[in-house]
Length: 76
Image 1 (cartoon, rainbow, N blue to C red):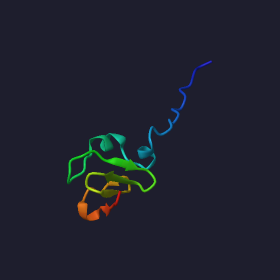
Image 2 (image 1 turned 90 degrees about the vertical axis):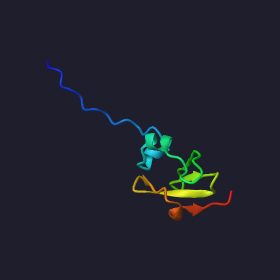
Image 3 (image 1 turned 30 degrees about the horizontal axis):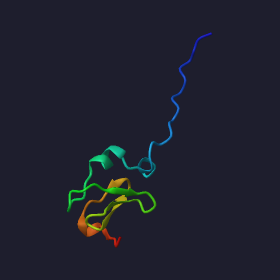
């Protein structure tokens, strides 16, 4: 009997960011364009949050929009 190669099985997403179509490696290197501080991924709103700048940057079609004029002001 000849072994046939099995089809590769899809693995589960590694993170919430991948579920939203955002490359987690990209999230690791992105920083706030104003403060240069790290960003927190908000899975529920699908945005990147800069606590230092009090801004939330939207993610559209898997692409973070890092323009301050496109960001939502947050009061935390």
